[in-house]
Length: 291
Ligand code: AMP
Image (cartoon, rainbow, N blue to C red; front, side, top):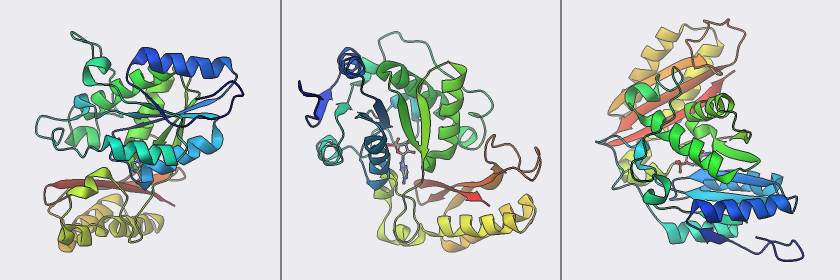
């Protein structure tokens, strides 16, 4: 927020789209650039890296906090998803966030709403295959947040790499002018990618969890050495199960821009190794570039 001299005033909280729009348009009227960081809360250093990037690059930063019911399947963890709005507010404030948009589900989804955004193809594979409807829920809420906020740039983590590509695609296809920026994954010292869902892990599971990153590193090395993808996938599945993972949804090497089969568009293109695996009842995802 700005006072009459244009200096920053600390974290303000709004809960309606009308208030969000009013604050952002007053900033734009003052010639200030605005960054947007959408989150589901339970904030950790990964989220705060997005905030930091926005605070450094933009005059004002808006964070959003909304646990989006449309992106949870019927047997997923919507009710138990970690929530800590007070803690989140403190962290956002310390990080230099100017505005928190924390709407209710009724504010986001008017009664009788029936419009959704679906990113065909890119949204149907990998995560889309194992979590049917997930990317429709993500694409719908992110399109709404981008339109509601009207920010100049929005920041999303590479932690959710496929989600980042889905969001880039929907912003382009729907002519939403906000620039979409990807931010590198923040990891714990042992390599585990930070995630709100890591809070579900028991001590024993937390000890096993870094094997996911280790296996991605091994797979990337094999891809770099020219090994075929089927062989890499088989090796990685065994590695993860031997380490103590309960099941593996996928660990594969894909074209980094389209997520199509690696090599289908030529082997000189960048590749990405992506994985999703279960540790007990907790599902972890991670990815790294395959150089
Ligand atoms: P979530 O609250 O899980 O929906 O995440 C909100 C945003 O933070 C998304 O753009 C995520 O990709 C990003 N994010 C979550 N964890 C990390 C991490 N460890 N490193 C970088 N970005 C992250």
